[in-house]
Image (cartoon, rainbow, N blue to C red; front, side, top):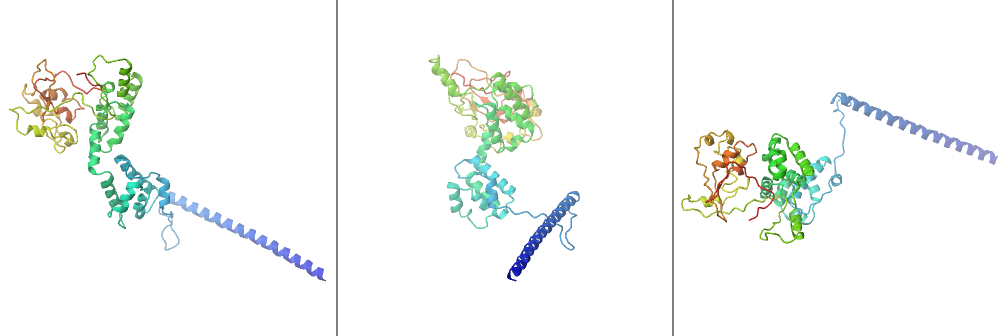
Length: 410
């Protein structure tokens, strides 16, 4: 009897376990079916939304279905932006860092209320000390616009940006290769957008900074674009070996070849991207018949074109007016005042031979000889129209003087 009861209990237990397993399998099948139906429903909604955006409606009385996205976090931002800032990297790094941080926060879809905290999470050293100690920067609830303004005032103020603009104005190839010059051109061009408003201005500014040997390879393509000129000079540099020699290479070759024939001539070290004048021009003492105050005007240097005799506010190149008369309705090649000027009033005196150590004085008004030579040149700039007045120097009307890539002997 006992054995019979035990067998019946085992049979019932086995049936219960089988029923439970079958129930679990049924539940799994139901869940899979529900998930499949939900996925099909979402795909159908997405297909309808692509065909007719805004027409997919939710249940009666509710707004249309919208795809819900998770807001970004500071961790998401740090995954996208790996650049730290210490405050010692320099103006250009600070400028690029701020733009990179804002772009990373936008891509991470970080809430705008967290932007200041996210940017400050990349601060170290001097930058972190500034953020913690400046009461304007550490105030609670600081907006991103005010943070940008304070950051610029601290790490790249307007005077620094003006200096970078001046570097672009005076940028020349110098001892650099074409690729190095082009890289520096791109790096500084963003600080002087007025000078490269179109492709033509950009190409002319780049061409003027090339060394003479390279620039002559593009003389027949006045209407070429920037990319075309860059390709031409890169090919010319490679095929004709026009890359300028480094100062240290020149000096090393001279030392290996023995003493120079003229020991008083020295090769000066030149930094890349730095404009080097062909001649050292000094201001001559004011003569008795010169107008009073001219010496003070000659000591003024324009912050835009880096030429003497006028300020940035008076710079005709910056204003885009006629370089001869200052009128805004025409350019110098169409200037009626220049065409009507009597011959012989060019302000250039005849040369007197046999003089050494001549000193030059910069004049505010352009000389007629220079204006007549380059009035029709589409690449004329403001600096071309500030002539030289001297006691014993004459400008040759048949030549266009251009800076060379070497120093002339004394």
